[in-house]
Image (cartoon, rainbow, N blue to C red; front, side, top):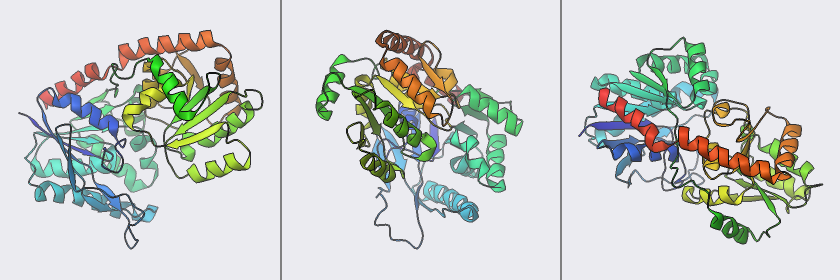
Length: 393
């Protein structure tokens, strides 16, 4: 049985089972092809600070037949501490590999170029085995801009990997443009479980009963971290405008993040509590119910790799409005949704209003979205491409 060691920046854990869930779901399918998979997901801690407010992690876990280790590394959250943080991450991975007596893998698969990828480079060199790296968006669009060293790390990972997968064509083109890399570069969409994310009328009333909404109330859904870069302020202010005429509109913002407190204060201060709701994190298995209960998913991010939430919503036949960034244009077309400019409140307002007031178009977009997802984003079929590479390396 071929042994695969996965190093990843994000993975489900006891404190947050949604973290990196797309990596886990992909590996579950790969495991069914007969591969033995072990995961190392280093988790950060801040030095010189009480860890009382930090989430607690097990040292290891076993989920769906996959062994996962969570070694600690030190995070210095400043530009000047970036090199220290990366070196601490690398050390955590290497120490974990040896201290846990992990079987020597046939290859390493890193998710995100940094810091997981650079740790993968170090360990792959030590063990004289090949490295496969999956790029997910922020590791190309964001991390390399942190410092000159960050870009050097990224370049090292790209040049050292036997194969590099990108989650979208847009990301692949960005890598080619910024790093002059083309050889061994390919696209592998995450995909979703198309049998799970499917239209289900029963979910609609169940969710509306939970929220104590009536049939006339129309749900606009956001799923993601509540941070500025996800366009959450533009979305809230758009709903503020829409609520003056659309009295049945309800925005549900699923997720947590550093803007959450400020958003809640703004909603309360401006009398928007009737229209905007914050249920917090929702278990991954329940997301399909929320997509089904919603008229529209809106994702006004400033940048993206290829967002799973858009694919999942379309799988449930929910129309989508999203910014024209990253791989969104590879998912959304004029038949299944609307692409809008970044930081454009007027476009959010007009697009939401248009779909809310045209049920026929909204339903048609959902149906077309489902067809497109079945064709392009079936996780089972997409993982076949991954295990083919596993078999060759």
